[in-house]
Length: 362
Ligand SMILES: [Zn+2]
Image (cartoon, rainbow, N blue to C red):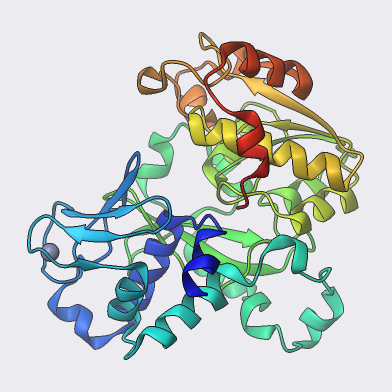
């Protein structure tokens, strides 16, 4: 039963590892291995990260991106199932607790089973309190007082950094991005390390009903009805810098509650502007399916410059996302085409199995 459950969902392993790191750092034991679960690196079929069993600076642990999510360390030989990894990180004593952790945090919130968001109960602090609680504005202010040069290196102007309330947390040496709901409540602070790739995520925060950046769009003096949809907050900021209204789904999976937020905001057209890689193309195909099933929003797709439909020469991508395009002054060279045109281009290229992507569950 456990296996069939795991096999029918696609877990975002990078996100899981970031969560596990946050759990690990909360425990005293992390003093003895401060790097465990850090330096999460995408290596295609495998995701590399620093070993929980021995301290290291170069990640030698690998975990499969897809089911059955086995992991092993090339350095010390540690390894096992995803449940084993969860047990180590969180400090759980048996398999059942490990599996329950995965179900609670990553499986039960399957989009079709979720109830519509109830703002009143959030404000009243209903039983969903822990997952959808909001932070005080003071927390945001504490971080926005500080800056780190990293954020300027990404090509953002002072205006954009202020607009998105980006700051810096000295304690964790991470850039901070407040993530607000459409109503402006601060659900959580996303933290991105400056010294290496990776995020420090708070555990158990529900973000499946948030389109990052939508709150700022709703503040605009003119009613905006068309937005670009990115994967990450820095891509959304890059679009803003390039005068393209945008929002981010905070990962590679679009959820029904996020579509609901777009509809509530009066969005009529969405231009899918995900990363310029295979996962980004798959994300576009799935996002179109979900949006067209649940709304009347028109869907277009962004074509990157000098590049064929986001699917060829995957190793040779010159621009991996909108932030890259901004840095290289190429944001003006994108092309927006209707989704159906995009899909036929992919069919002609014959590289991806569209039907399979459409029918694979997240
Ligand atoms: Zn090891």
